[in-house]
Amino acid sequence: MRGYEVVSVRAVGSRLLAVRFADGLVGEVEFRESFFHGVFEAVKDPAAFAQVRCDQGFVEWPGDLDLAPDAMHEAIAADGRWVLE
Image 1: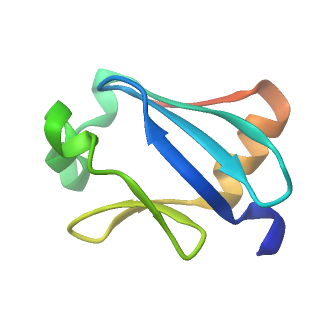
Image 2: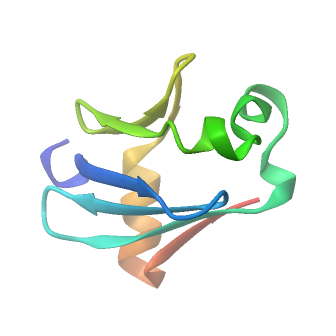
Image 3: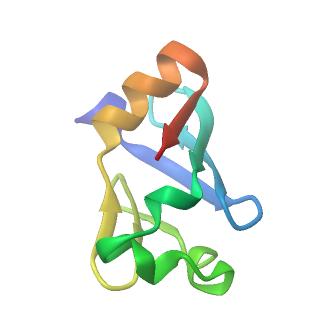
């Protein structure tokens, strides 16, 4: 997974993440309002969203919520941004 490993993540407001991967790729993850349902409703609140962290190559939040680093890397490599709807 080395290339897909996320080495840093930062919340930019309440709906956007800035990420950097081990291979140097940087980009953004944009969350549309429609994405915040089911388990991800827990991070709809801006204070909860801001608790994002990078752990062992994954973007995650408290409560075992995480994002797939391979899909994120692929979308960012293609478009500079991964939009989650």
